[in-house]
Length: 145
Image 1 (spheres, rainbow, N blue to C red):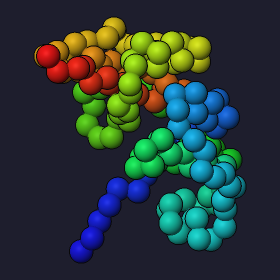
Image 2: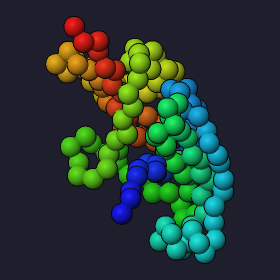
Image 3: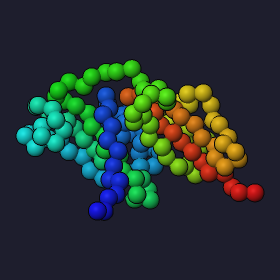
């Protein structure tokens, strides 16, 4: 049986703000749609499912993120996920320049949780809160010496 990762889906409070954040980091919008109807109720498991969606892709073409903003049922606000909570809690991106990426994130009001760490002189990395409280990890591979 063949299997491949297709995308990561993230429910957001403000679709346009979240698209702006991810496109400024370098992703491109592949498509947008508004979905509803019996097929979405069945697929998602919510009666009356109605959402605005956008699919974004990383520049290398391998990673995709599907963002969805619920129109119905009403989105449920929860406390932001903590890094040590069980379950899916972050999306990670390899970046060429973490300082430039952090400057872009800062223009969206998104800052590192604590700072930028150096992992064994292999990576500089950090977690930050993106739009809708999404945990985003940015990691820059360091040159080998």
